[in-house]
Image (cartoon, rainbow, N blue to C red; front, side):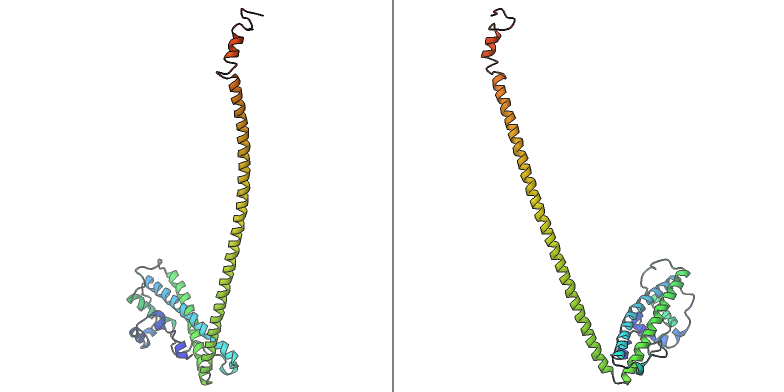
Amino acid sequence: MLVRSICSLTLLATLSLSGFVLAQVQGGRGSEPVGNNVDLSVRQQALESMNQAAGSKLEDALAHQKLLEDYVKSANLVDVCGSPSSNDQHDMAMSFDQALTIAIDHQQAAPTSDAPTEEATPAKVRAYTELARSTWDRLQTAMGTVQYLSDCLSKQGKLADYNAWENDQAKTHHEAMVAKEKEVAKANQEKHAETQKKIAEQYASWQVAQKKQHEENLKHAWTAYKFNTNANLKAYKYSKQYGPNSYNQTYAGDRYGSGWGYYGGNNRW
C-alpha cells in the first residue's frame, strides 16, 4: 500500500475543511499562535470535534502501522528499515496549534451545534486542550512511522510484496472472523436447543404434576360426593320416617298420641 494512500489521514479529512481554508493555513496564517480572544464555547467545541476526528483517524493509522511493522519483521527487514529518527515528520505534518486554528475557523464558519454540550469554563477548555493535544501528537507520530516504513519498503522494492502480504492478512482475518461468527452462531444454537430442551422437560414435569393433582382432586371430589350422598340419603330416610307427613307424624302419631297409650291421657292401660 502506497504511503500517500495510507497517509490520507490528513487534517483536511479529519476536520472536514474546504481546500480554501487549508490553503490559507499552509500559506502561513495557520502558523500563528491560536488567539486567546476566541469565545470559550467555540474553542471547547472545536477541541471536542478535533479530538473526536483525530481519535478516529488514529485508530486507522495505528492499524496501518502495526501491519507495516509486522511485515517488516516477517520479511527480516528490521535492520534495514530500523526506526525513524523523528516519528512526527511526514508529508502531511501539522502542528497542534495549526490544527486547532483550522478547527476554530471551521467551528465559527459551520458550528457543530447551536449550543455547546456543556457550559465552557477555562478549566474545561484546558482539560480538552490537553486531551486533544495528546490525541493529535499520537496521530502525527503514527502517520510519521507509517510514511517512514512505507518509504523504506519502497526503496527496497518490497511494496508489491507488502500489498500481497496485507491482502493475505486481510483474507486470513476475514476467514477468522467468519469462523468465529460460525462458532458463536453454533454456540447460540446449542444454547437455544438446550434451553428449549429444559423448557420441554419442565413442561413435561408440570404436566405430570398437573395430572397427579387432577387425579387427587377427582379422588377428593368422589369421596366428598359419596359422603354427601350417603349423608343426604340418611337424612332423606330419617325425614321420611320422622319428618312432616311421615308415618310417625300421621297414623302412628295419631294413634299413640290420642289416648292409645298416651302418657297422662284419659285412657290408660
